[in-house]
Image 1 (cartoon, rainbow, N blue to C red):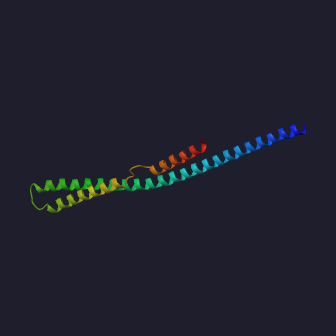
Image 2: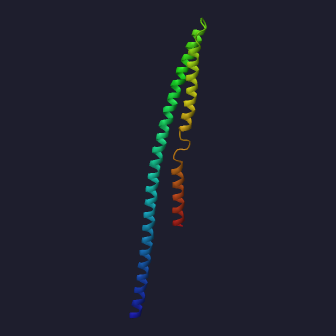
Length: 138
């Protein structure tokens, strides 16, 4: 009888040990999942800040470009209006062309500054993290 009792007690110990190991694996998995989630959130926040800075800079440049373009166009219209009765409007025409050229330059620079693919690094990191978690779960 003692042997039978020891046998069932050993099985219970093995069962508890297996449950403890399963619990520790699950706990480790949850801990890793939290770490990945926090890291993803931090990365997303940093990338959002960077994208916001770039978008603000690009928007400011595009606004300056629009202002210069409108000013240059106004100067050209005035120059054309003044050119009909007289000839000495060369300065106004040059100023208008210069402002239009500056407008085009600032507009192109502003467009290059805007983020092409916002949050691309964060998306990639989250995909990699999800892949790692899937590997651990299977």
